[in-house]
Length: 182
Image 1 (tube, helix red, strand yellow):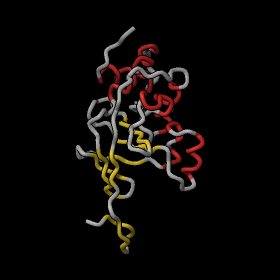
Image 2 (cartoon, helix red, strand yellow; image 1 turned 90 degrees about the horizontal axis):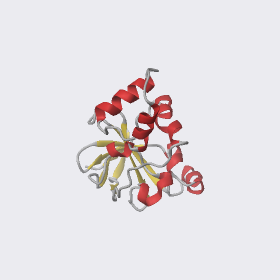
Image 3 (spheres, helix red, strand yellow; image 1 turned 180 degrees about the horizontal axis):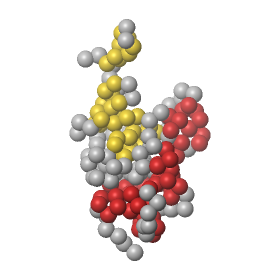
Image 4 (cartoon, rainbow, N blue to C red; image 1 turned 180 degrees about the vertical axis):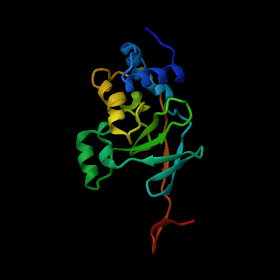
């Protein structure tokens, strides 16, 4: 069965699940499998280092790079452990709160070492997803995104999300720490 893929309908089901109210589990699973409908597509082409772990995209939005240890689900195990000890990571995870759709989740980009975003066409097992529960609230993220993924891993949105150029800014040491050169 298909359900409406509009933010209001999705938000209503998510709120019911979170608040322990009655909801249609099949409808929630449908939204889970189609959640990348709400994620950013090819409009992001550049991330420029701003400060600390923050990056600004070509549209002016601020993204936060997650620590490498929080990228487990998007990296092969052989590369994951090496990245924790300083080796070049297989991919980098960037997050931005969704203050646009009304769902209140989180946009996610997983960018491979060559700049290609990891989507269902690149490597479905490690692909990026729109998060219904923000990763900063792990219990909510686990309830809405992680736990449903196990029995329902086959996302339906299979599009090429393109490449992103990550631009590192030149840094210099000051008395207050490392700062970007302007």
